[in-house]
Length: 333
Image (cartoon, rainbow, N blue to C red):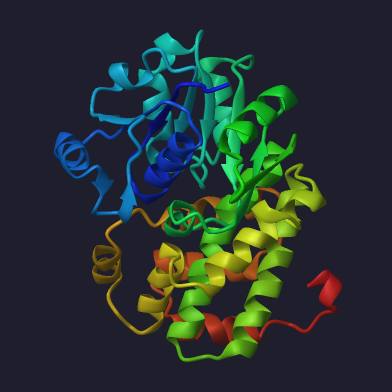
């Protein structure tokens, strides 16, 4: 049965999900804070800035009024940057009794290092139905009906299936899991590793280096995920290795493009301005670095990305640091 969904966040990914849900027959309210942006969406019936060519079905409405967006919506799908997640939930607290919450944000809370399901439980209560969407997805390909598969994670298996059911169609496959930790850590860590992969390519390294970096990056993701309670099958699935391969190898990834620019020696601010959208891996690098220290997990690639972004280390110096590490057996390195 069709369900009314409010999609909060009208960037490329939020817009793609709103279009997907509307095409699946669900009434959708797409919200953005910027009234000017919403005016353009309403006029063009398309997000020309972030997702050109994906025209809105008739059952997709747009608004900059948050109360209007969530009114009468049975499910709220949040697609805002991780640093805005907590403030948004505070604004929605008065609706917590009637809303079910899902999010497609790939990141962790910056100050606390908490996973976003922990923030939901803290603000809206542990009984709020909550689910996270993650996996190897580029917004443009979803909007173009290219074959895509994701994972929906929730402790509430019934709600996980409800959310997955909203998204499924002949082009879009959604799996479910109860492992919210693995889904979120995979989606966050891969952004940091995508920056590293971009830097390696920007420095002029070839396929050998990229393959090694992805493989050793996966080992880092697995070590942290298992230390924090994630399941190996999640990290070896769509939300882990699947998303890692996608973002490390294709220039549709903002994090990879950011790394490419830095590897080529461009100023950090210039690269970010050229991309023009949130680069989650920049903030996430510091969070993952802290979590690795807290849980005594060795994450050398992540550590070098952190040092480049926060302590002025050059990408080439980071490569030397990695190559000159003490040799170890692969399974223990």
